[in-house]
Image 1 (cartoon, rainbow over the protein chains, first blue to last red):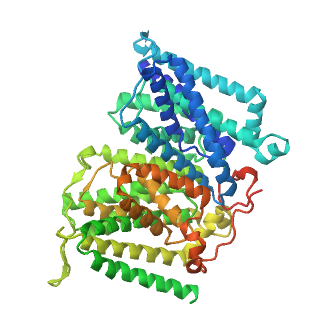
Image 2 (cartoon, rainbow over the protein chains, first blue to last red):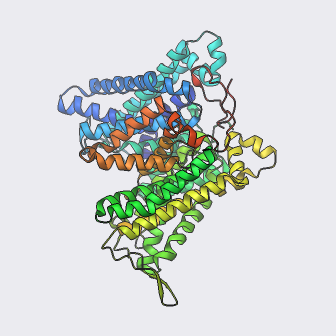
Image 3 (cartoon, each protein chain N blue to C red):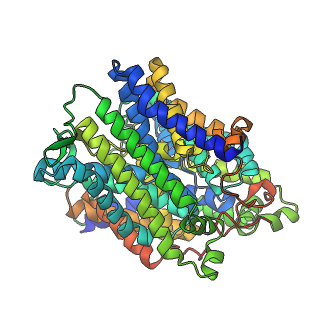
Amino acid sequence: MTQMIVNGLVLGTLYALIALGLTLIFSIMRVVNFAHGQMYMLGGFVVYYLNVVFGLNYFLALLGAIVTVGLVGVLFEVFLFRRVMRIAKREENTMLLAMGTALLLESLAYVVFGEKQRGVPPIVDGVLEIGDAFLPLSRLLVMALSAVMIVALLLFVQYTRPGRAMRAVAQDKEVTYLQGVNIKRIGMLGFFLGAALAGAAGGLLVTVFAVNAGIGTAISVKAFLMVMIGGAGVTAGAILGAFALGFAEAIGYEVFPGSITYLLIFIGIIVFLLIRPQGIMGRTA
Amino acid sequence: MTPKYLRLATVAVALLVFFAIIPLAFSASPYVLNVLTNALILSVIASGVWLTFAIGRINIAQGAFAMIGGYATAILSTRYGVSFWLCLPLSGLVAAAVGVVIGWPVLRLRGVYFSMISLSITEAVRLAFLNGGEFTRGASGIINIPRPDAISIFGITLVPEFDGTSPLPYYYLAVLILTLTLLSLWRIANSRLGWTFRSMRMNEELAASIGVNVAKYRVIAFAICCFIGGVGGSFFAAFQQNIYPATYTVNDSIFAMLYCFLGGLDYIAGPMVGAFLLVISFELLHPLQQYQPLIYALLMIGFMLWLPNGILSLPLFERWMADTAPRPEEGGRAEPAGAVSKVSSTGRSGA
């Protein structure tokens, strides 16, 4: 029982990092970053190569992953999304572009990284005992790091000038534009932060679960589920959705064998959407 | 020639080519026929997706419904000895029934929300078959699915048994299925139903306000899409004679959409053009096979950047397409940096 709560908390915190990145890009650009899971995968591989292959310190490797994946996000925004969003007559176009970027990252990863599973050894050794539950210290560290990043992001969005501009763009793009905010720069910043969060999540979780080139879709699906539970584009919703999914997974894996858990989660979510299509905190469209 | 007759002539020539010339020319080359059969049925599956685009939903679930159709055929024919000719429509109906049950709640979602949940459906269905126990045989899948048997009425054999010596029967069946699919879609698109769908794509609220039962019609469109997907899946199950939970993945669902886009969403023939172009060019570029997803990805991105309305929107094809159903100008002027209006219905005029 305690073990279930501990696992749920750890998963929820890490998932929140993934969901926040997706929701951030969505709220600012009105684009679903279908490549989110692939960016996560890229983050994991960057840490693996820097830390395990080149022997760099883990924390520097993590920083490297955050910056690399963030820059990939910026490149996507500047060279692809900006143009397609300008010329698109249909919403479908940006979405298909987003899927194209997902497929691009994944197939490139297969070519460059191969099909092998890659893992990074735990950062610290030792196990913490809480009641009758066990919590490896490295998981605690990963959880703490991601909690720090989440808090830092929330503070940034809440109290800084660019953060305020981002929130303004999310509310109303035109009016923000009329107030003299550089919309393009905010879009770039949003994509950078969103992608960087995915990279950070990948870099942190690679110490817990191994990554492979094909893991992206599964992660994206998880991110979508969290955002749908909480409501797209709402920060608090993303965190709520992440913990909901984290606990559902932790409980499911304890009670049911294998991948039935996810099947039940899917069914649960479809039923949930029947009652509340906009998610727990989402505004009605 | 007026565009109408030009199009009729094109259709007649296409039918002649597919039913007579290709079989004659390639009867000694099973490889070519297999590739074409593949392209034909992929066109069918993608045509279903085209219909959900027609109601303004981005459907990334078609792989799931092809899989449901495939498993329906596999289970019915291997376990209950049902003839393939019954399995084919039944599989479509099973897929459509599942489509109605799932579609009824999830079709309330729009835009990005719908595409996110439909992608999740592809994953969910894969997991369902993986965990189906004895019923679906899990990861080991179902093998030895029987070939289509003979059809005879009063002792007269109408269709001989598919004995597997030549892929020609499969090829003919595939051409027939695609022809029927395109004909039905053309019929739908030009009927009251088609205009209802179009009105929903433009603006669902407006359609509802003039008395269209939006909830009903979107389920109808989705069910037809799933039916077509199920029939395609059923064909593939009998064609390849096996099916596994890994037979259809999210990528297959995305590719079905890609075919639609490549050909052009405004044209019924779009999915077919897209599927043929990609499938055949990949056979020609055989050495590049291992980079297929990479090239598909680049194509997808390139098309969105430079040819967002598909191949059939090129001036070259203008005469054929000149008087297809008139489409009022939509979307209006793009907003600065192209923001999609907060209400996710695509038809809202910007700014």
